[in-house]
Image (cartoon, rainbow, N blue to C red; front, top):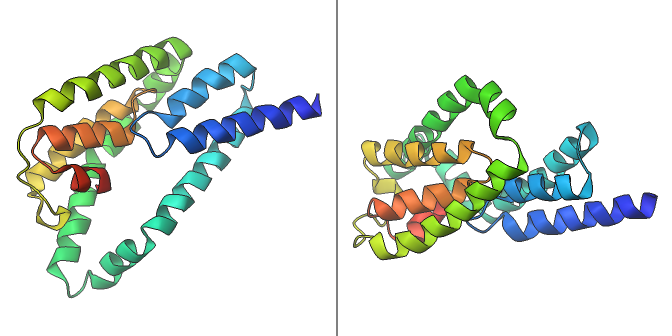
Length: 187
């Protein structure tokens, strides 16, 4: 029995590692595989938090120099302040809506059927967006107008639905609003 749990944990860790940095929902994949493996309940949730914390630490490590430059430049660097303002504006809609709808989201949307549909629709959206992307107008986060950052944040609210990728929603919304690919992925 213990070896099965180790294999399940290794598989879930692999799924998290492979999906976290792609515009697909790592959480959605974990929900589906948790159900398939019977790795549900409090121990499963704690494990998910731990492996997702590992992914967050990896992102912080990769972007540490840039984040440190922003933090230390807030006082004197207008670009750093503008970057921080854009990130905060993009974060606010999902924070407010997520807090307001948390109970409904957990009760109604956290199931493999919703996640599967969201993953499929996300894939279709990525394919369709390739044909709809306008010529880029924005090439630096430090130059994002405040309304653009807020609109990108509204797109990120789609990721409150389990199975919709935060990065995917942010990147697709950014691209459709004229942000170049590199900057959209970075934001």
